[in-house]
Amino acid sequence: MLPHDTIASPATAAGMAAIAVIRVSGKEAFAVTEKFFRPKKRGVKISDAASHRIFFGDVMDGIEQVDEVLVSVFRAPHSYTGEDTVEISCHGSPFIVKKIMELLLKHGVRTANPGEFSLRAFLNGKMDLSQAEAVADLIASSTETAHKLALNQLKGNVSNEIKKLREELIGFASLIELELDFSEEDVEFADRKQLKIAVENLRKKMQQLMKTFQTGQAIRQGVPVVIAGRPNAGKSTLLNALLEEERAIVSPVPGTTRDTIEEDIIIHGILFRFIDTAGLRHATDEIEKSGIERTLDKVSKARVVIYLFDINELNLYDVNNDVSRLKEYASPDQTQFILCANKTDLTLDESKKDFDDCLFISAKDHQGLTEMKEKLAAPFLEGMQEAGNALIANVRHFEALQKADDSLSAVLIGMESNLTHDLIAADLRHALNYLGEIAGSIAADDLLDNIFRNFCIGK
Image 1 (cartoon, rainbow, N blue to C red):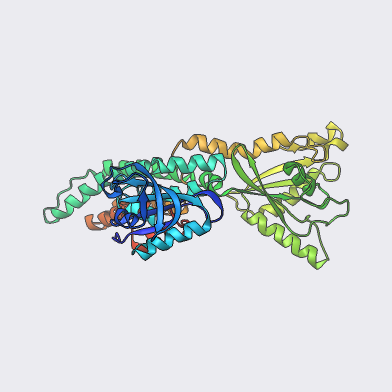
Image 2: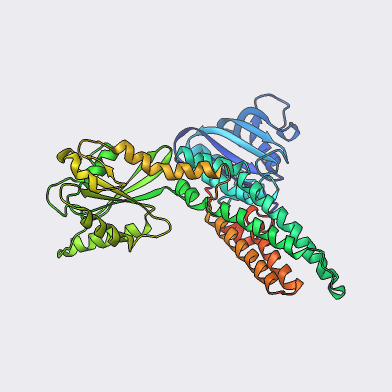
């Protein structure tokens, strides 16, 4: 699977910059670079240099100087890819980068595909598949918690948990496989009661790991939060107050917001995507009807719904009716509802007594917003704390765990039904394969293509 040609690509973003880095990896990396790199110190050859050395010199196109550069040398296997690697640090002119790439291609180097450096690192055993995916997440991380999540995965925390589960499972599977070798003698090496207990315990560990997925996904991709309620409840005012800028139009005329408005806010290191929506009411205007349909569609995809209501206008019966309607569209397992009474600056405290488990705010005066932010972030921060360093955030990992769990469930059913050794062994093998896919000990070409083609060029 491992290609043997030499590849190169800019490792820094395109555009004008102070410095750009071009990475070259493969068995010809040193020889090719020497064809156009002239060290300032005479007699120096990078092909003879020890690993992790940096040389100052000129990139030459024939007798024409292209740029003064630094060339970093990394010898296999002590490089990112595990191959001989050169990194050329030049001035960040797009023309200079293009010129150096042309020189590399002229001397037989191929342009790297997206993620090909990381693919080679995986194939050369420098990292497992889960860690390779964490590289892309680390680059894409935009918040403190997303960065921490990706860093933990890059360190191998998820891989280590999966490895422990797989090692336990290999122990069970080996005993069953041994029984197959002695099937004619009808010998049992694995005590069925102990095996059942062991498989059940293993499933509990896997299910505990799967429970972290919702928190992991929210931290990795951001939390969609829908602000819903009747017209003039103060939804746009609330969005503006949270953003601390006039993003949404605020008007006393009901039905002003007819489309969704989305903005990102980071709270305690977690990205929340707030969505201001059209007011919920019986509308006759076609445009407003369309806006309400979009509101309900956003509710169906939200992780959190803030139901905002004017405490001076609605009673408990009205609030419960509206929330019940919204819950018909929301995911019962994933969506958290937060009841939020607005315009408390215009009411007496006696009005609050009917509403239990409700936040009381004044979006206009920015009162109660701190409490709202704390309530929003709390479940995700608690989920991170409970999960520790092993948090499942990748859909592929979650689906593999689900399939492994289903296979172990089939093992238990098979033992209850007194199925033959070969059928139980097959289900154990399936579970092992699914767990192996996470770290990449078992990886098909199409799986690798699907993962690495989403990487940025140069990584």
